[in-house]
Length: 113
Length: 112
Image (cartoon, rainbow over all chains, first blue to last red):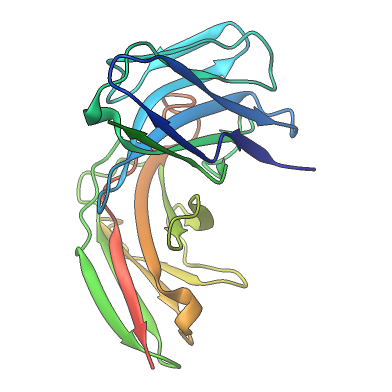
């Protein structure tokens, strides 16, 4: 199993540009989440999903969209990038009904100029 | 979910036990205590969890007080590779399914 994979590893955007961060897992996990981590800070939940077709907002959802058309994929879209969205983005997944043992991807480092 | 409080940073000598405290005074009866750690810039890694009994696995031990209002993660023989940010979170089993939030954690520095 590859676990949770994220692409790209690094990305630089200009203010106002849009892009999609990709996240995929091959463990057939129902739950998937997106977090952001600013320098020296903890993880903040952006959006999460409990299954295909079902998504919900986390702590800091503004400026981000998500969709979950398949169990495996959970892309995160930045609609109009802002410097405040410069951060490291982590995707995570876990099984439904399991204790909170999440598996995290390696992260995407995003810089918005 | 119950809120947790952790010290922002701690130091530990290599080879000694690292004891990381977590306060969760508002924990309710069906909520578990979980610990994760994040080494450098990697994604967080699950360490251990418990409800009310002490737990031990190959990575660490978790001691939960009898009133469950606080807990301690113990790394019995800390190594330099244990330098990381440690997160304590409290959640009910499958409560708010899928919504798992983290705080700022404790930065543990293991020194030679």
